[in-house]
Amino acid sequence: MSATRRAAVLGSPIAHSLSPVLHRAAYAELGLEDWAYDRFEVDEAALPGFIETLGPEWAGLSLTMPLKRAVIPLLDEVSSTAEAVEAVNTVVLTADGRRLGDNTDIPGMVAALRERGVRQVERASVLGAGATASSALAALSRICTGEVTAYVRSEARAEEMRGWGERLGITVRTAAWEDAAAAFEAPLTIATTPAGATDALAAAVPDRPGTLFDVLYEPWPTALATAWADRGGAVVGGLDLLVHQAVLQVEQMTGRSPAPLAAMRKAGEVALAAR
Image (spheres, rainbow, N blue to C red):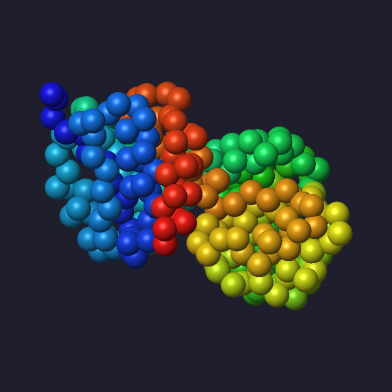
């Protein structure tokens, strides 16, 4: 048997991460018995030292907050996708020692929407303005032909979102969070806010909603997702995003394609149900 190949997810906090469940399920399905995937609590200060200790058995890293931007100076190459939002969630470690950074959240969002039949929309809404919101804008730059309205809590955040829009080549209009119920008039709404932030909006879901992409996976379903589904709208959840971005990570790290989407999703569902 060949030497064990290693991969892991890094972040702080990290105990909640489902990435080990998803990646290990993929390895099992692909017959990669000599592969291991772990999780490590690593903050920004510890990241350079951790990466320097990695030996040739390491194939790749998944990165969550707060490391997605901090890792960039430590890489040899960054994909245009990751560069566009200044966020790397995937590092592939090559046989010749190079560190290649990518962002699979963006194509993961596009793939999760495509799976539910959403390939193109005329306009869209984004709730929130954090790191995930910039990835949402990048995904929308690929599928939205018109304006995106971002609902935010401050003028500073509004300015940030308009700046991301200019950088990504998509028209972003901003509106106050107090008017967020108007977001649901668009055919696609992407909620990128923390747990509980959209609960009060559940009562404002219209009778014939379009598609909701709520990036949370725990707790799930959110109050907004429940109200949306009750009114017959299509709902894409955080587990969909997590699985689709992990599929791309597995393919990049192992060189095996396609990664087993169904097995990875099932493993994630079982793990969440057990919590």
